[in-house]
Image 1 (cartoon, helix red, strand yellow):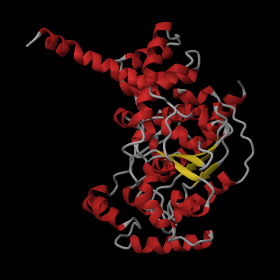
Image 2 (cartoon, helix red, strand yellow; image 1 turned 90 degrees about the horizontal axis):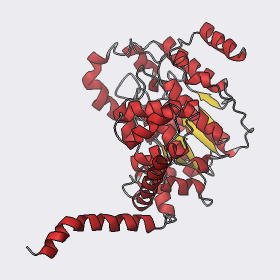
Image 3 (cartoon, helix red, strand yellow; image 1 turned 30 degrees about the horizontal axis):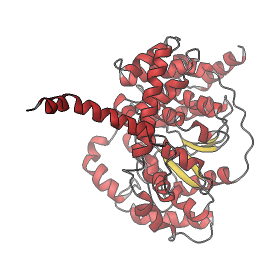
Image 4 (cartoon, one colour; image 1 turned 90 degrees about the vertical axis):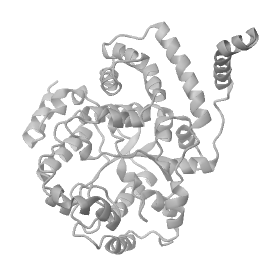
Length: 431
């Protein structure tokens, strides 16, 4: 082997890596995605869209199509004929931009929001907050890592204020999710301790962030599930040409009656056959010890609320129900469930977030649910009726007034009896 070849084997990979980085840095960030790519992204529910920023920033800034962010989790994938994306395509002057799948709770949603703050300023949004997120340990690290990426972490770190109790809280939670290793964790540890990042920290952070932003612009338009073509477009013309809520509700009930006729829980036949029936005996009474009253999720929700407040985003919050027949079978304490709902609503309303659609008592209504925990059919009709009015009609300017007390362990661990909530409120007023 000649000396020239030996040198190439040693230095060639380094040179190629340098050239690749140079290409990424010089590639224009202003590259534009097509309207079709935006359309696919809006309903793809892809982690790629969730983690990154360029594509959703462009879509939510698009003046030709009014995209409205719908933040949620697994319910957003229930594409029956009355799903909000299908209803909007048929009747409304906006398109839901769906952000979230199973496991996308408030903490990953917080980082998601940080990547598109400019697009949320003075706009409207819909946020589905499920009581079932509020388990004792909160979101688990594997679920968080699935939806969160370094691009979002660095975007937040660049703006993080070490004196802010909200950023200190986020920093501590981020370390709990990703561990103590790596420069992101090291920077987060400084924020958690109230210490500013050094000039060198910021230089390295900016370099890596720029690299990731270029990478995002190059690759985030690929690997998008085409839910628009598979689920939305084929169903649009099956709905009546003119919107009539009563007629749509009747259609939803009739459709659900046909699709849930092999079980007593009124869940979709395929779901019952695959998920429920094989495990029916062991699932009886399986939820009797579930408790959502105490959870770090309350603090995670609070940092989301702070983001909405900082961006003056007018938000409608949806609290979904659970399937009444199923919860009776599995033994869930529904009074516990309703106390959780009251605690969530208290946290929202005490801080000026008053646009709330509480569906928690609708789980026993005929054909309101698609399965054991997700709304569908008649539930989607009611959901769409409320959210479309909120989005299409003028709404009062929100007046948010946040309290740091909702970040504390005291609040996260408070048992939400009416007496405890009243005492918490009095303590807040007396400060």
